[in-house]
Every structure is written in structure tokens, then in C-alpha cells.
Length: 233
Image 1 (tube, rainbow, N blue to C red):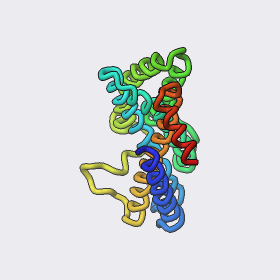
Image 2 (cartoon, one colour):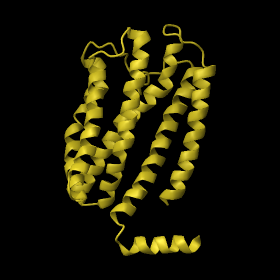
Image 3 (cartoon, rainbow, N blue to C red):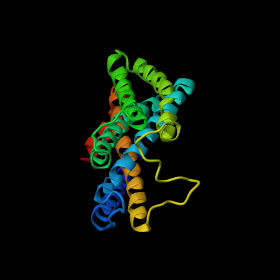
Image 4 (cartoon, rainbow, N blue to C red):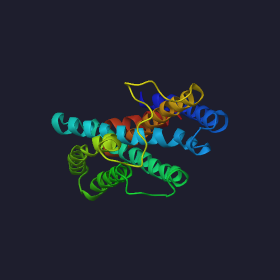
């Protein structure tokens, strides 16, 4: 079922993200204090949200794989890594672009920025562990343990602007408060977040399907599937 799901999720994500970016970058009003520079929020915030959510998912999947010995959990966790790393890198790059006109510098060793950089390095470490191990199963377990240890960085990212005096602004969206954004900004902002989540789900499904075929390529069921595909062609 992952093939049709990834297809429809991918198309839905494309339409939603395209609509959100056109609305947010071209038609949303200019922000009172930051001018047009705030428009990068439609890319920066969704990618930052996703980089943290995907890492949390990797940790949960790793725990499931370690405790219940579910191979599929390890497969999904591994293929979440490049997706999460891409989101973390995009969040850092767009944050730097946003920081230049706002703070007057591309980079500051701010608590939020530094902890996000640590998150990106954790993603690199997870991928390196997978590639360093001779047996894929060993890489799965080693990466799962690192992911669980690295979870401690997520609350640091989340609460860094409250625990320390940082340049980074507080969260725009809070469950306990009404959004401070005008609906003409808020709607495309929420659309962008939803679109990024859907795109990442489609990406992970496609990568996981290839991972399963690669890991199980010598299994009988893969040969049967390939024969069935060849006959259908």
C-alpha cells in the first residue's frame, strides 16, 4: 500500500506547498517590523518543525526495533535520517538568511541555533553508524541507541529561548495562546507546515520501499514480486 500512499501524498504535498508559497511569498501582507524578510518563515519554520519531529520518530522507531525486534521499524528509521537531515540543513540555511537582515549577522552561537546544529550533527552520526557497520543489523542497533541518547537535545531546542537569553524569537504557534499572525499570513503558514509533513511522509515511504527491497533482495517474495511485475509489463 505504500506505493499509492506515497503517490497521493506526494501530489497533495506538491499542491499544498505550491499554494502556500505563492500565497505567502506574493500575496501575504508585509510584516510591520521585519518587512518582507519574514516571508522566509513559510520555509524555515516547517523545516525546523519537521527536523525535530522526524528525529523523535527515529528514536521511537529505534526503541520499537530494539525492544520488539521489528525489522520494519529499523528500515523506516534508517530512511527517515536523510529526510530529517535535509530538513535540519534547510532550517539552518533559511535561518541564516533570515538572521542577516534581522540580527545583522549570518550566524550567532545562540542557544537555539547551536542546538539545531547539534541536531544536524546527530543526523550525520546516525547515517555514519549505518554505513560504518559491516552488517546492516548492527548499524540498525547502534543508530537506534544513538538516537535515543540524542533525544535529550530536543527539549533543549524547544525551550532554549525560554531557558536562556537568546536572539531567537519565541515560538510563533502555541497551544495555549491564540496565534499573533493575521489570517492572511497564518493560513498559508499552516498550509506550508501541512505540505512539508505530507511531502516528508511520501519521501520516507518511497525510500523505505527501496530499503526493504534492498535488504530482502535474496528473499523468495521479492523474486515473486519482480516476476509478477515483469509479467505485467
